[in-house]
Image 1: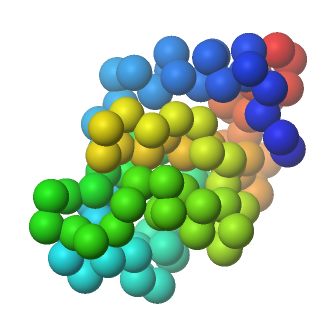
Image 2: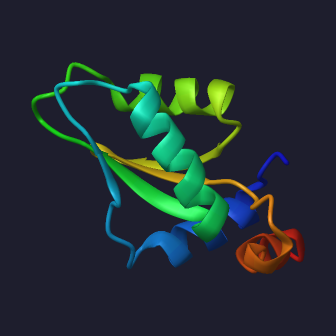
Length: 103
């Protein structure tokens, strides 16, 4: 699902109060972090991921890799923090995605 401008604005407002639940450090973006992000998105649909100062990764590169490999929708970059969205595969967790479709 490609996000439109109003949908991104809505998700940005919903993500404002969230704290990053994953941090990418000197180990970089590895398979363990990707699987954790995938699982977190399946339950929450909207998360923040932060890049620590000791990582060589760039925020735009991480967003592109996650879009390609996990299928997330990139919402926003705030400094070294990414806001990511993905519709849950389980019906009972699809609360936010139903709201986004209605926009």
